[in-house]
Image (cartoon, rainbow, N blue to C red; front, side):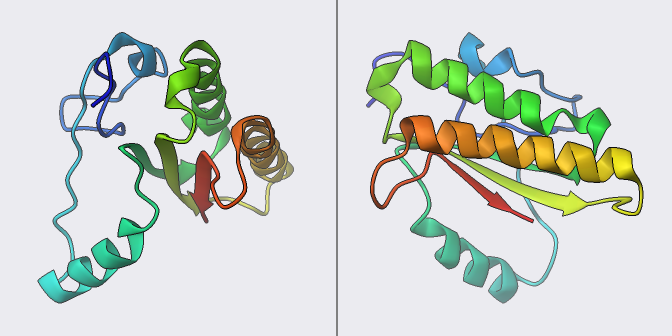
Length: 136
């Protein structure tokens, strides 16, 4: 067990959106996925099991400048910086849907998001383990 509670799952909820500051507040935000037939959900659940850490932050969102995905990755970097004991134990899974890639602003933001993820992975990653895994 971790010495102090961290969010178990982070992402949009029916009660409203989360803020990157929630990562450091210890606030738990739970998100469930109930779409698709049960066998489909089970298959994906099994595929993802190998990616889970002791604690896993999950984000499902559209990739666009207004969604602040890169900011979320920087907040996660700050968390790992402040809590070195969490390196190798907490993983951030980001499931992102590209949007409006015909616009340069969106392509530029996608590059910024990848740079932010790569920075965290280079800084805190270990052989065979990356703190941030992006599904796009």
